[in-house]
Image 1 (cartoon, rainbow, N blue to C red):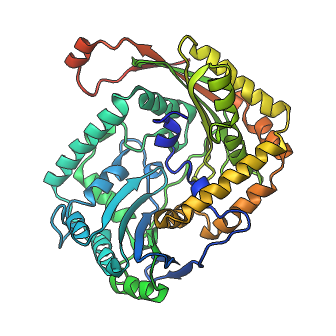
Image 2 (cartoon, rainbow, N blue to C red):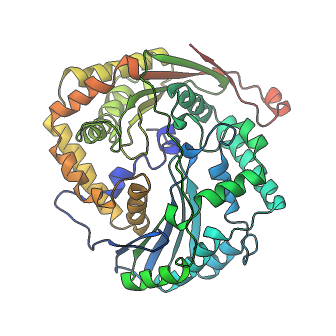
Image 3 (cartoon, one colour):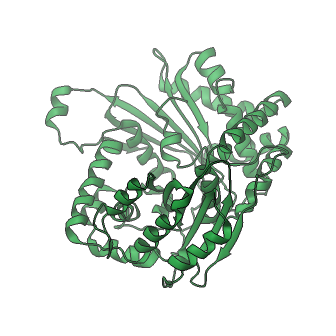
Length: 467
């Protein structure tokens, strides 16, 4: 998969299952300790004494999939505002305190969550808790900081989406693939919604969702669980709960035929996106199906030895880059994705035919035992990497809990992968990778005119046509 893959940039934590989960025959070095405060805050602690460090993460069950028309982008904008001062902290002071204590901190917003973290020495946990508790319920939202951060977000959108032809294609692709699902909206928000967002919108969003009973506190590292619980009670315990009313979810209607989209935008090369509607672990699927889809994605795109790289890039030389991906961990059903850039002298239509042939192949014949063994070995190697990263240990727990799955799922996940048969992989390919579930987007490159570009506004995007 090429360096700036849409699959890795826009399917947040898409590859985490391969980084997060226990390898065959291996269990976590220590158990996760769990407690819930009277105000509803759930606390999960995973001790790891290999080094005197920790990661502290607060996950909120709120992201772009909770937003509605006219308000898209508000979750991400609120993430920015969380660093711009509270009743006791001046704008930017949160970050300065963490840095002064030798730590690092940041945040990220996805479709199903917004998360904040600090990586610190293990004797600095109290600092993280005091700061996070302060901004959980006591954020100071003022007009000047709001207007400043709103412009930052608009510029971020211009740079990362409007002026990036592949990102622009992915955005329009998602809006076409989904008819009702909120996954059709970009995390950063639609331009028109950003233009009309107000401080009152952000304040209401914060009051509604940023409450202890809508949050999960995860700590991993060189910590004593009882000490963590005591500090959490001290700092988060006094915070008031909120009445949480999750929005009613619009079920995605059954797709009745293939959708096609052509995006015309200034670009150097064409780009192809294909997505088949698929279930996830939390939604209607046989219990084994998401595991089979995970393995299918790895068989197709599990490194240089996988089918797509071996056959379409190095073998037939039809693609300069190509990839596939599936994410079993999301709140709502998603897509099994393919992406690719044609090799020099090849057309995007030729690449699409080649990918369809790869789909037909996995539908027609079971994968080999050797291919399954290769995927299992990759999972084990990824687990070795994950065990060295406190951050990903905590992220595993926070992600699963936030989307409505039990964190203990991690303990059985790879065993369930190992139980998947070639016939089950073939079955999910036959059931879900079908034309009536498919959306295809093609980036049709338009000339890159330096003079025209210099005169054009920086937010100018491309046209798009739905076929």
